[in-house]
Image 1 (cartoon, one colour):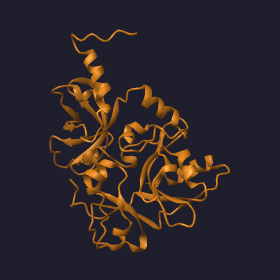
Image 2: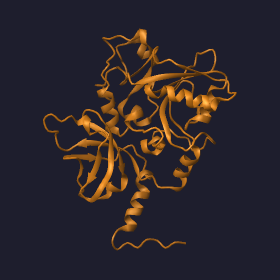
Image 3: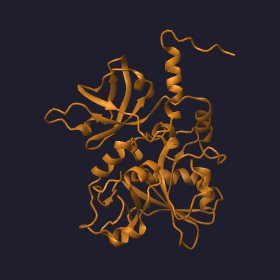
Image 4: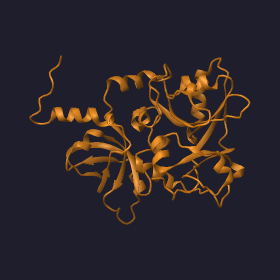
Length: 321
C-alpha cells in the first residue's frame, strides 16, 4: 500500500550532475547499466555506473529533460560521489559531444508519496520512482526542484521516514548499500529493480555483470532487517550499521548491516542462511530478523534452494554429465 505518511522530503545527501550535448544518450548508454538509448524521455530510469572491472562506482536516477534545447539528462546520485563521477566520465569522453556540470547547489532532489503534495511546483515535477517496488508498493515519486522554490513549511528536511520506507522493502540508495570499487550490481538488487539491461550490448564493466548473470550464483544480496529485541537504554539502532550478522546455526559472519533507519535496516546477507530452520540471527547482543522481500523474483532464491536440497542428508547430488 502507498504510504500517505511520507511527507514531501528534501534529500540533502543527493546531488545532481547535468549531462548535455548531442551525444548525451549514447554516452550514458556506453557508461551505465541501463538502456539509455531507448529510455522514455518523460520517465525516470535507475542504473549503476561501473569501473572497468565491473565494480560499482555509484548508482543513480536519470532525469531526462524533455524541453531542453539539446539532449540533457540530470543524473541524481550520492552528492559526495559527484567529483569522482566527473573524473570518471572525462576519462571516457574522448571526442564525444557531451558536457558535465554539477548542479547540486541549484537543484534539490525531492521525494514524496502519491499526490496531493501541498506544493504546486513539486506536484508538477515529481514522477514515479523508477524502481517498481518503490513506486508500486510505497507510491513514492521523485523529482528535481530549484532550491529557490523550496518552501520550509511544505518540504521536510528529515530523511529518516524516507530511508525507513525504502529499508522496509530491502531497497536503499547510494552509500547505504554500495561500497565504491568493491560492490557489484547484484549486491543491491539492481537486476530486480530494472536497473540493469542484459540485452543492450557493451558498456563499461559489462563483462563481470554479464558473466555473473549467466553463469554464476548470486549468494548474497541486500535484504531488510528488523529488530527482535528493543535496544538497551543509551543504544541507538543506527549504530548497527557496519556491524556483522551472526547465526546460531553456523560459526562466523553470515552478513553485514549496511544502514539502519528507524524501525528497519538493510544489509548484505548470505541467502543460504534463509534456509536454516530455527536459526537465530544477531548483531552483537541484539537479535535481528532478516526477511525475503515479497517483490523478489523467484529466481533469486531458486539456485540457492537447489544447492541446499542437494546437500541435504539422504539427497544424492546429480551426477556430472
